[in-house]
Image (cartoon, rainbow, N blue to C red; front, side, top):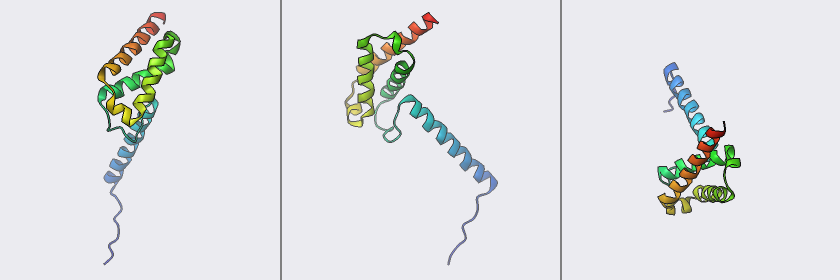
Amino acid sequence: MKYKKKKPTPKQYAIERKIHIDTQTTNQWLRESGIGLKNIDVGTPEVFQALKLANKAIKQHAYLLSYEQLQTLYQFVVDARRVDRRLKMPQGRCYKVMNITKQAIRKAAQYS
């Protein structure tokens, strides 16, 4: 016996559409934050928070940072994007990156 596939009801269609839109919005936000979609479940929240802040600081406030600070942020971004390095990353490194980005944000607020 072959059964006909039922069309979704208007409410089911609306729910599926909402899920699709929310997924697209989330994926776009993650891409803008510099977080990869494939291995988002691997790592601690601190790593992802520091990665988001590091990408923001590099894109928007790079002119306010010293060369050493920029090198630290670049190296952190490279290491955080690789899953094997992300797993071995100590929390102290994440906090160091967050401190650097907070300094850049404060400097930007001062000059504005």
